[in-house]
Length: 354
Image (cartoon, rainbow, N blue to C red; front, side, top):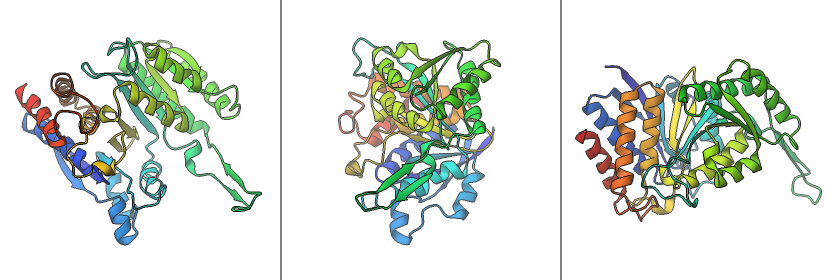
């Protein structure tokens, strides 16, 4: 049996609560024959920052770099100015560990309601591959005459040939491995962002020559949003840049039933990876046993799939599907019909019943 070292970052707010249920599921899988995992906890987040001003110490970063994978709860504290934790912890982890792929499945589980009329699980089943370390999120830019009536603010989108190509090739490979519609859509804005997306489009078409079995398509980001609502069944795999990916994956979370079931991965295919629920720290629900842990549990399922523990990943996914279809009244916090811990217990029950 293979053993893994897994870094656990509960984070802020309800992050620790949902991570606890994800860890519960992971430990249960070990009990029923799944992989053994050594868990190492890290107290990164708002409380640590408020206590001693630390965000991401070099010693912690070095340890995380050597982990087989990382599970993150959520980062965001009401007593810390917005941007400090996000840039100092989340973005820093992405850049320092070179987690250049953000992988976001948009899948509607049976029994989960979608706000889209007349759409079901057979219609909402696609994946977004988002470039995760370049674009507008690099922090390139600055102010001129800040605080004056003549202030200028500049935010630059950085796109490198190597960064774009490795993301696009990952998307082609993932589309081939997924083996569903075998269709890859580039989401951009070539009619306005004529430099950045000229590069993206050229690389996309050049790479496509190495994947003759994959159908290619292009859609402007505004059209992508429209089709995600009107005809989500059009999509199989979407590849896009950092900012557009950030936007359309939140829309994806809503059409798949909400943040309570949306999970994602930050991946370096040649290194480590970090998996997390898409929702934030939700501080107003902290300690109330109301938050939905399904997204965090699904992030562990994604982690297992990434580690090629496919039997355990499939077993966990099956247990999650049974819980949301058979037991939960809603995916929304406080309306599930069960508390956070009880939802985790239901997943454990189905894992043991198999």
